Image (tube, rainbow, N blue to C red; front, side, top):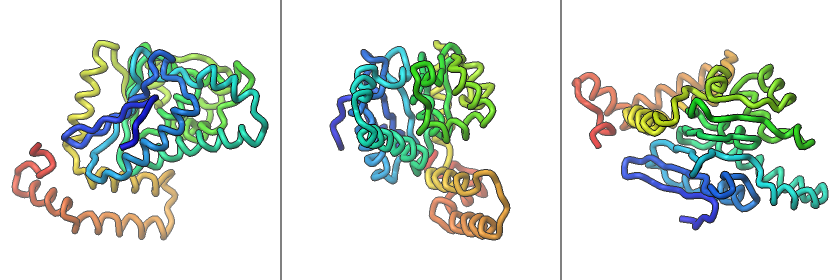
Length: 264
């Protein structure tokens, strides 16, 4: 497994991966090294087919304060071509997380500014603290939330994304839940128990079924009904029903027992 300076990647015995943003002294702000390490981490996760799902978290007080100031100063000195390369690396991080085959759950505490909203939006599910603080802050410093914008729009909708990208208003966890960015929010003392509860719930589900369901949801997207989509859904359920996990799940249900993946 790669060695990381800005991240921690842990694997539990029950198949849960936890990827920690690990620059707490810098409020987990992005820099070039973290972006490159995130790509390595996602590649490592994809090589492990037995993983059940991924938790994305931040060490310390904050999930992530966005871009590192020192890195931004260095970027300001780069020419267009070098800035384009930086943008492409960050865009690849977002695309890799969004397209990750296993389910993803972000856990947010403290600040989540700028590009951090991109990471949260790329996850399948996000939960957070009621007093967490979110901001698309880019326009305040004369730039724009370009590469994260497609994912933020998918997460909270076009109208809300326009508002917060243009105003750079800050909003808390309750508003993030109202917008759909968070599935649920909790008081800070309750957050760790909530992570445990969400983890326990996800572990009840068939690992292959969750991956197949994620692929299904990405294919269906906005639900445009086409003959090709209908054929995809027909073959998807047929494949899963005859798979070993599908057979085990159906047999266990009919026998009124727990399926094998719940017996750990």
